[in-house]
Length: 106
Image (cartoon, rainbow, N blue to C red):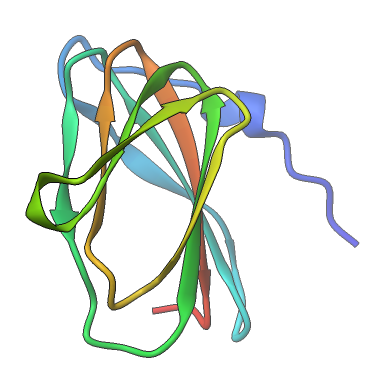
């Protein structure tokens, strides 16, 4: 077992996105914490791989983004579940912390 202290990765830049924090990495999953300042967009993208991902909002609000300008409002506690191949991104309306889980890891 391993306890992870996510508060230790709570860092924001004046503008944009704090470089990601690799929280956990194993042959079975990857956990990544991203901290986005208000107004920042984590661009819509996809990966040409099989697998799933989740994007959990740890703090703040904004929108999960998808193909063809799709938007789903997102707030603290919300989780997006998606195939890795499906286009995904995030827009931060307030300072926002997200935790991305990728299985299997890429």
